[in-house]
Image (tube, rainbow, N blue to C red; front, side):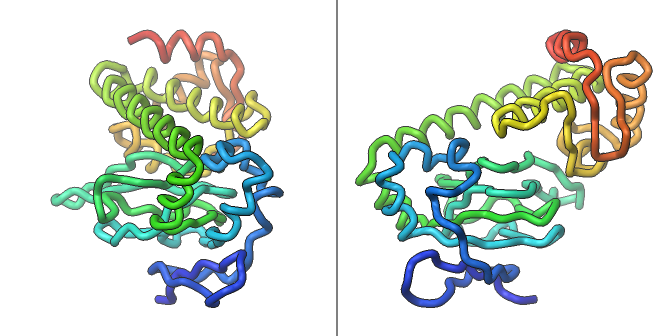
Length: 254
């Protein structure tokens, strides 16, 4: 298998190896990044973006390729620019857990762990901006607003994890699915996209593994929501929201 390489935006040594696949194309710079307003680097004023550009590089993944494998050494932090990825973990008995989905603007960042605790795999063709851990620490030491933004992101992720644990403990399968669809709506809103239509790049199996359900249960839940007139599904990867208020009430029922 070929190595993952990051193409540097700045002059210097050609490429830096990461581990799994290869992405040879150069990035276009922070100031024209389409997800800058969603990413942690939004904490840097535009006139200071050049400091970040000197440390960044882009990498591309094809659908199904790995960004990192569980147990790999953490050496870089990433911002998803395009596409979608899933974060998974395999249990000792072989079962797969999906810990979350990564969309444009999401940050794959610092952790107290020196090695990845999850495998991160591209669901669709994806592009990511990469910065070394050392480079990001240097930026945080220089620009305290960036450090504050990273702390806020960590707190948001912690809150989201707590919400998910409560959902798994107390919510019925239809309530879990409704909450998941509304979360995907919020992600589209942050990107400035049409929030009446939800694009689901992941499979039904991915959704089941994320919600702690079987694929059969997830399929029945989609059928139930369609039957009640809350959603329509023109194809397996598209959901139209027909009655958002009832979806919100269902997701909040627990």
